Structures are given as structure tokens and as C-alpha cells.
Image (cartoon, rainbow over all chains, first blue to last red; front, side, top):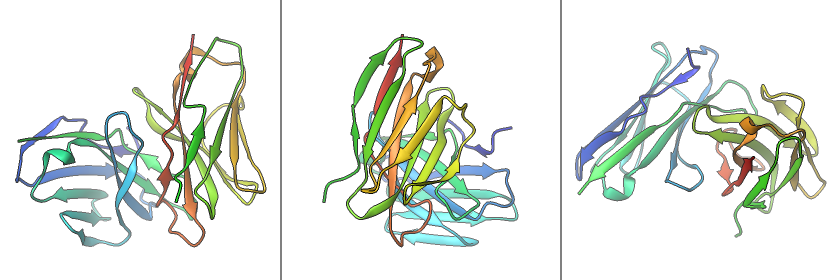
Length: 111
Length: 114
């Protein structure tokens, strides 16, 4: 079992819809949780971080964390074709930058 | 402000050779991390340096090594290259006082081992 699991997709949604991306993790000691976006041929870029249970909203993005269920999700409202990318879930347990990444979910937003 | 700069961007080596990759973090960033990205294994942590000291190390063989200089620039070296070392090697930096895990990635060095 991988430490961080994501459905590889592709997840296809129509423009303007809500895209829901999910991630589960196995290490109960995980403290910090991140969503990175990676466009094809580009490097990952951080879009959301979340540290405590509940929801965190930033513009069209909402990250949700449930530590009891070891579950992290990312909602993208009003999805745009420019949101088409691979979304990587990452977790870390300590103070350093030793991130464990999931395999990523490829999102396709169709005009 | 310049981003994280990695050189070279592309390189081809043969099995048994060694390679050195370079990373210049964003000005003012003192923490540098290295990751390997492959289609099969995804993104995997190699090591992290802060103030010239290795702070964390991932589960890679000793052929993978790195260092950081006093100006925060970092290098990683892979000796005795194997076909499976073909990958995109990503460097990431974190600003001083930043939140761990909130990283800025460079464009990567794509290594092909023949």
C-alpha cells in the first residue's frame, strides 16, 4: 500500500463544474498536508496547504482535511480549462521538507 | 525575483558514468530539497539541506549524494549511473521563516541514462 493514495484519473469535468480531488494517507503521524498543481512539462507549484481538520478556502479552491479518516480533498469551483493539470497531494510529519507525494490525479476540464 | 534555477536542464549519460546537477535557490532561501520524479514512482524525496547541513535523507542508495554551499546553492551527484536513474530531478527551496512543505520548485534537470 502506498503511503499517499490518489486516483490517477483522468477526472473529466465540464467547464464551470466543481472538480473534487481526493487523497488518503496511511501515516497517522502526518502533520501537514499540501496540494500541488503540475502542468504537463512543468514543475509542481503549491496551491493549498492545510494543517488542521476542517475546510480552508482560497478563491476557487477549498481544501478539506479529516485526520480521523486520514483523508484530504481539494474542491475546485467554477472549473476552467486552465485548471487542466495533474494535482499532487503531499504530506509531511515533521518540521523539515521531506514530503511524501501521491501519484497525482490528472484533471481535464472540457470547454 | 528569479525563481529556482537548475542546470543543466537536459543531459544524457551512459550506464556507469556519474552526473552532477546544480541548483540555485531563490535569493534569501536557505533550505534546498531535491526530489526525483519518474512515471512509475512519482515524486520521491532525495534529501534536504539547510545551512550547508543535510537535514533529511530519503530512501535512496548511497550513489545519490548532495551538498550545499555557503551561498545556499546546492549540488547533487549520482555515481555509477543505472538505467533506472533516468528521471526528472527537481530542486525546491523554502524561504527563511517559511512553513515547511511550502516549496518553490525549479524546472528540473531531465537525466536520460542509456
